[in-house]
Image (cartoon, rainbow, N blue to C red; front, side, top):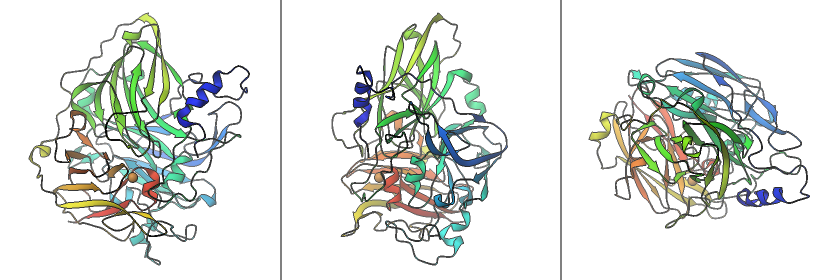
Length: 503
Ligand SMILES: [Cu+2]
C-alpha cells in the first residue's frame, strides 16, 4: 500500500541533507515520450521490460511493446487499423484482453473481460457460472500466454470517419484489470481527422501527451503488491509516487509559445485536481470524446481515472521561468472523489527564455456537438443502480448483480439513441465508463452539466447518492458491451454489467 502520502513526504525526504543517494528527486528526469506507431498493420508484443523509474535498480514491468506507457498509436480517422498483440509475458500472468478505451469497436475487438479459465479457476468477487461455453463467457476472445490476437479497428462511426480524440488502450481481464494495469499494461492512442487539422491548434512537437499514474515501490524499486484482501466499499489502491509517462515527476523543456497538452489519468483509483503554478493559464479545448464546442478557461480541472482532458497552455507567459503542473488536494463542498485528490506537483515545464514566433491559436469555436445530441429524450430507458452487497464477502453490484459475462441487463436496438440513468446508491464516488460509443451527459441530479461536461465523454464521475443521465447513439455494431466503474478495484470487484445491442 502507499507508504508516502501524495509524494509530499518523499519530496521532503529527498531534499534532506544526507538523504540516501537512491532518493527520487522531483523534476530531475526528463519527460519520456513513448514511441509512436502510425502504420495500418501493427504488431505489439506484450512483454516484460525493466524501466528506469527511480534511481538505482530498474523496475520490472509488464508492458505493451517494452515501455510503460506502451507505444502511442496515432492514426487518421476512417482508416482501418489492425493491431496484433502477442502475449509474451510469463504463463503465470494468465490470459489478457485489450480494450481500446473511448473507441467504437466491434464486440469481439472490444476487450471482453472473459470468464473463468484453467489459470483463473474461480472469482472472489464476481458470480460466474461454471462451465459457460467459451463464446458465452468470452474466453474465446482472450489472449493466452504465448498466443496472439488481431484486433481490427475501423475508426469509423455510422458510415463516416469517427471524430478525432485522445484515447488509450489497456488490459480488461476479469478480476485482474487492476493488477495488470498496475504492472504497466496501458498505452495511449490518438485519432486525428480533417476537422482538427483545419484548426490552428498547436501541433507536432507542441502537441504533448501526458499519462498520469500513481504507483508504490518497495525498497528494491519493484512495484508493491497491494491487491490483498480489500473488499468493497474499502477497496481502492493509491500509489505513493506520481509518474508522468512512466517517469517520476519529470520535467520537460518547452518553448515560450502555445502547447496542446493531452492529459490522461491512468491511475487505478486516484483523481487529480489539476492546476498550473508559475503564470501560465489552462484553456480547456477537449475531453474524452475530442474537442469541445468552445474553449473554456479553467483554473482547476478535476480528472478521474480513465478521463482525458485537453488544454492549450501558452508558456510565453512564463518565458525563462518554470511552470508546475500540480494537483490540489482539497476541494470545498461534497467530497469524496473515491480517494482524496492528490496534493502536490506532477511535473515541471522549463520554459526557454527566447521569444519565438507562434502562429497557433485557440479558435473561439472548436467543434459542434453531433446533431443527435439536440433531440435526446430525457426520460431514461434504463437505470443502472450501484450498491454494495453480501454479508461476509461484500462485492459491488449493479442492479443487484456482480459481473457475469453471460448476463446482459438491457438490450437496446441497433441504430437507436438511448437515454440511461446511472444512480450511485453507495457512500463513495465512482467513475462510470460506458463502452460502444461516446456518450452525452444530459443532467446531474436533474441539473444541466457544467460547460466542460456539455460534450461527448465516455467516463463520468458519479458522486454518492447522485443520479446522472447520459445518452448514446448505438450504430454499426451489435453484441455485448460492458458498463463499469473505472476505479479498477471496483471494476474487478463486481462493479460491471453489460448491455447487448440487438439488430
Ligand atoms: Cu467505483
